[in-house]
Amino acid sequence: MINLADLQGNILRGYTKKPHVRYLILEVVDRSAARLWLAASVSGRNGVPQITSGDWGENKPDTCFNIGLTYEGLCALGTPSASLKMFPNEFVEGMTARALKLGDVGASAPEKWPAPFNEPKRIHLIATIYAEKFEQLNEVQKRALPDEKAFRLLGTREGYNFPGDFVHFGYRDNITQPRFEGVHDPERYPDRQPRAPLGTVLLGHPTNLEGLMWRVPHPVALGHNGTFNAFRVLKQHVADFERYLDRAASYLLEHPQGYELLPRGEEEKIGKGPSRRAALREIVAANLCGRWRDGTPLALSADAPDPNVDLTDFDYVGVGDARCPHGAHIRRCNPRGGQIVQRIANNSRRLVRRGVPYGPPYNPDGPLYDPAKPYDGDEPERGLLGNFIGASLGAQFEAMSCDWLNLGLQDPRITGSNDPISGTNDPGTSWFDLPLKSGDTIRLHGLPEFVSTRGGAYTFLPSLKAIEYLGSPM
Image 1 (tube, rainbow, N blue to C red):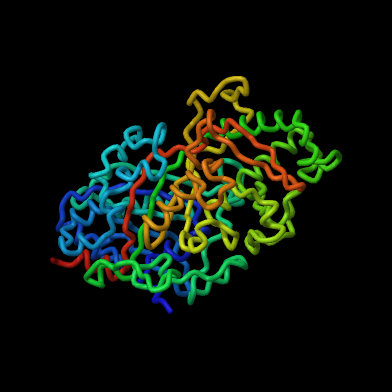
Image 2 (cartoon, rainbow, N blue to C red):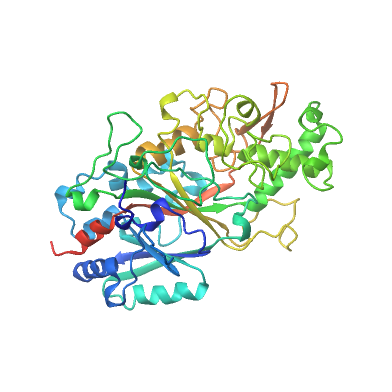
């Protein structure tokens, strides 16, 4: 059992009913004032927004407010050096120092990140506001930052959930999250995956690795029930993605095995009255992700979207193993019970994923869209504000990013390839295999990088007791 009132609310539950989100990226100006602010945030005294816990009681809040602290932020608050030494190396070093491991190279390199992420040592605290109405974001921000006595606002990032939980590449998102032992959530979909131990996401609790618990920074009031978050600003090159689907469909129209992938007369299964080319585009999109764009998993329905299947109750065994590409995005991120080389790692890298789009929806018929020209950067920037939460940044987020997304080490059939959607791809070397019913594959080449990093930070999400501790005189 877990005391939900001691947890920040965005760890074990998503704020799916609050479509607006704003991130306040802050620098400590005055240590004493910042500590008083933290102390007030636990109960909402002195006008400071109250930290939203995991226990809402009977009345759901209109707005939610949560915080994460970087290593530099803990230092700026005067956290004792004995405590600071107990935090893991990857958190201490910070996201920019881990760029190579994360695939943040080329266009994603930290030296190309815009302000305020170009000065990572100044980023001390990231406060997050979730709201039902846009106007509430401004109201909570004014309460949080009435002046600059405690914190200086370095910048903001703002997102909005699209209707139906669709994101910029056109896929339905926010479908599945780990279910945790001892935590009841009636809104969750049924899921064939085993329940995750609380230590998957919370410090001080058992993990699924026998005899292993992640180190809890002392004092216990600081580390217990805390967790870590990789906050990422991920730019999505939507025009490039749609253009690649065009090229792949053209290639498949001429491929001698193209009719094995899509038999004649079955085009209408993909959608009402699509052309063969349009149907092939959607087949490629589904295989790259591992789901049709409506969320239907290929493991359950590989030939066409099916609104009647369960979106989460599946595994990569038997038929599902054969029909979902081993290199598909969702299979790389979470291999479920499928056979992988690192067998013990199947469920050890599970993460809580929270994400919200930023930027305007893509309009393929807009005046800037020209299929004959490469993407020139004139489109408004759009992407995802992502949070990847787990008890170990190194063993969960970084291991997934490096080993699975960008090296393909979980299966020899994809080793040497990158994730087709979020991987660090180069058109000269990238490839992806489309599985056929016969067991053969059609190999696609020339995938560019569809997602590039535009900023981020590693933060510690303290418990309510830890926020109280950090707000007390030291």
